[in-house]
Amino acid sequence: MLAQRTRLFEMSGTAAARAAAKAADAGKEIVDLTAGEIWSELAPAIREGAIDAINKGVNRYTDTIGMMELREALARMVSIETGQRWRADEIAVTSGAKQALFNVVMTLINPGDQVIIPAPYWASFPAQVQIAGGTPVHLDTRGNGYVPRIDDIERVITPLTRAIVVNTPGNPSGAVYDAATLAAIARLAIERKLWIIFDECYGSFTYNGHEHHPIVSLVPEVRAWTVIVNAFSKSLALTGWRIGYLAAPKELISAVKALQSHTTSNPNVVAQHAVLRHLDEGDGAFEAGLRGQLTTARQTGLTVLSGLQRVQVPKAQGGFYFYLDLSSLLRPTPGDSHAKTADDIVAALLREAGVAGVSGNAFGDPMGLRLSYGIPPEQLKAGLGRLVGVLNAWD
Image (cartoon, rainbow, N blue to C red; front, side, top):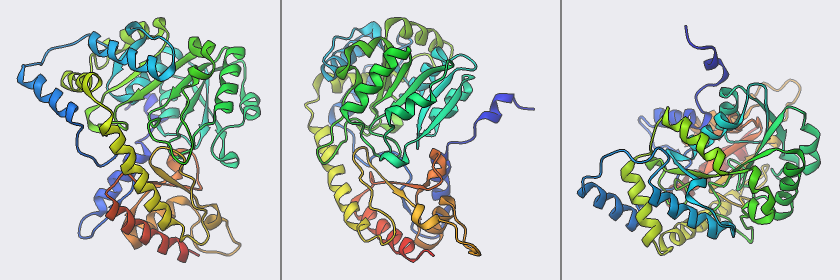
């Protein structure tokens, strides 16, 4: 009855985890550590820009890929961040980073093309590649701190390889790619004529001396083969406003504009005006406050997680997730009747501790568990405390 392509994907694992947490909320307090968002008030300039747009009666279409004024402001911002000059015709505004990524695969990937995706990965990466008719090629990074080795990337390249996804800081892992690794990936992409889909949505949040590097800053020549994807969902805590963008060669932006004209057309006009106001008038104080909030939450969480007896405390180099390696709890034992999957641990945490997390199975890693620390600190401390108790008792 349904189109065959619907067999290629199912509901996002993170969305399913959020739904499970909400369903379990009846009758008891659930600490929800599933959501990829930060609990925060709006930035003042965002609020003022939106209200001003509404009061002025802003309600009409903009250009398909965003208002020219917003694209010019984004070009200036990306120019500062990368140290290279970008123009408005190299920028497209989208309904969140998810649409930006969808636009990219639909305009770059042909049926049969292969796309290298380091695992664990954000669940929509392979799903979108499959919708476009491509083949995801998963590259296990668990043995190298969730950062791919160049030799491993080279080993999986074939004549069908079209692109590689680089997500740093990583979702779900929190791993931050070092400059040497990024530069090596860039040189490899130039040599093999591969596109780099550079997802830096968590680039605003790094810790303990780790630094986010735009790949085109390290190897400027790779710009012709790179698509930068970002959004304000994380950096300004605007997940529900759905404003993302991509920066890419002009020809790709033209193709994205044509595609988007047949899907969503322009992103929400009030949100566009709000973000433009922030880019023009924001002084960085709000972003600094968010980073401070997450830095404190991260330290609080790591202190609680240090009580884990059989699970290594995560490094959490960037983003706002703790990603636990549960392999020490999941090694099968002959005759053991206990379930041995991350899904079962997630179910036990929800049932026994009232704590909701996301199984690594959602990210192509049957040994992982993702926990968000973007929630209020008192809830985070309580939830992680309960989690430690359950995991320490797991046998």
